[in-house]
Length: 390
Image 1 (tube, rainbow, N blue to C red):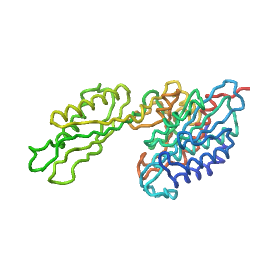
Image 2: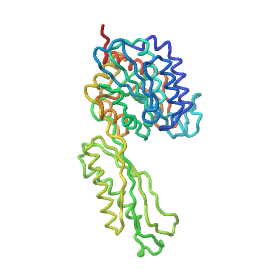
Image 3: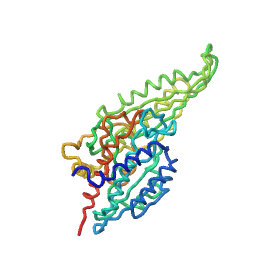
Image 4: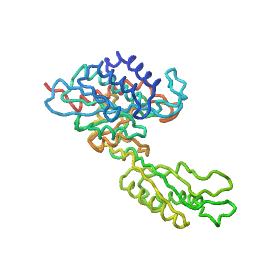
């Protein structure tokens, strides 16, 4: 079952909607225009219910099938927010707001789910209920968690939940997925090393935090090489160092920040503990003090095995058996759909975005040729998981 005729008939308006979103990017939870456009489009599609302001600026729509003998419901999720990046795509629909752009394809994700809303509301050719979830603040704001805390699954209970993300480098019309951990946890840390400042020509009268910082940065890398199973994956990256204001003054403190990524919660626990030990111990060895603020942001994204296969079969119904991979490589990039997968069984699939620039790149753009494939996937998934009955 390739792209359906009704989608081909409406593809121009879907492309126009996507490009309008791209011209007008909004960040995190500050999505007044985007959320309003989504809600308006859902009402125009004829869905049964539209709920706004869930998780601050999230939108949820409900579509009921012709029958509900099964009493089952599934959730379909897309993200809506952009990134704080200056666009360099050169496209006619490039961002009109300097310093903001849709560099991860959330404009395309939103459009594909809206396209599915149109088809599902028109046909109602399923038994049960479909809950469409349009989420804010995926890019660092944990919008999925905010929607859950605002009662998403309590108010709109579902048996399964599915997500879809575009994948640059994968040909348009192809899909890829895998069960188990597919995306890493996302943690952030801030470390403050405090010593005693003074004249750079008289270091004996100071406790210099700079060598403490240097020793600590080196030592942190031994956590992944010596404290964990080499079969496991993890990254510890120190990304900023701040300290001092003059070339002849030893500063009283230095601040480091960075990120930790893992694919197993047990490894995540171990790294946090070892980081804390090293900060305190290495600082003390130099006569300084160290403290760490460690924040857990996104959990590991784990696709449930059965739901992964359901998603793959739906993709095969659209693209063909040879165009759906079940061996998606793991990555330590994060995704807050993980919060939803920790609440409800489900899976996230990747859809091909062709030979575009990489995600979060200033030259990135979502390939509009992928829209029809994504809409077809969503509708095929609903029909397979909520099969129509007489």
